[in-house]
Image 1 (tube, helix red, strand yellow):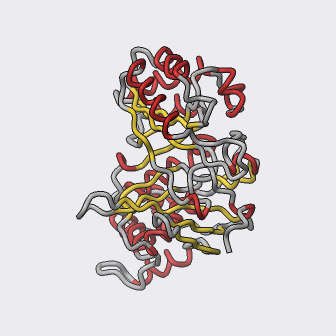
Image 2 (cartoon, one colour; image 1 turned 90 degrees about the horizontal axis):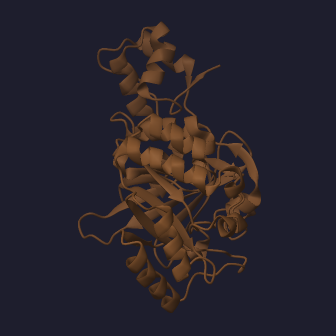
Image 3 (tube, helix red, strand yellow; image 1 turned 180 degrees about the vertical axis):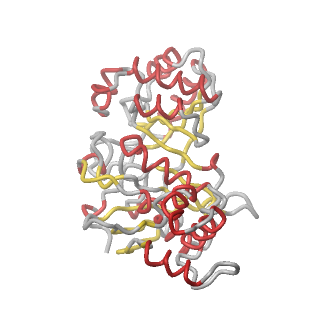
Length: 349
């Protein structure tokens, strides 16, 4: 079997190619060439042609096929439809951040699976069901392809696209390591986030391994019964288990925990919801990310401006911790949070 480039770190590549006489320095140069220049060098100073030819015979440089691309006329978000080693298409999103003059950049929202087994009621990907895990190189190549097409430099990655990253743990963490290593994409580890619907064993493993990447946990409700209505993961990993894992993560990392709250009108934006959340996280510093629900079916609606303001007032009163309103763009091209559905999205084309 050929060795897949972009599917492991430079150290992984060294371990695979060492029998051919490849040094760590050469492994890093090969990694940089594959990731930054999308190729295998024809020649390198101080490296014999014979050795490079042996490397070329031993490796394969896989690449995603871009099937489609659509850019929002409203906010510049761009959605890409890719195909990798399997026939099933999957999506990634380029998010422009242009609010700071001179610091314009892009973030790539990466998919880690085709479909998703979590079944969250407000998520189009969850309604697809699980199809397969993506390989590490398929995640890394999403960033490479989008960077090559982007007018802005890619300075961050969020594993918040299709799929549950912590159910494809090893491949996702390997992809994050490749994207952050100096001979990879050299993206700061602090600018790489993994988002989970609440897979407690994965959170505990993430904490135990003391990974440098950010962790975001989608909470959406602090009421177990209400959370279970829209997030079936509550059955497998109920709130007490989930919060124990989150507290382990905080203790191990010392970081303020980021919790995501998908706002659904009339469901989780009451003063009672703010009180329940404050009680749930008591004694642990958090940042709460408020995200409007995006549901093309119309079943769930985001809060009205008045409802949002009342909820924020309740959070200030009862929670007293940082609250950020996260803009979820690209609704017009179905690129917003919760709207990715791969081949089932007939708006592409």
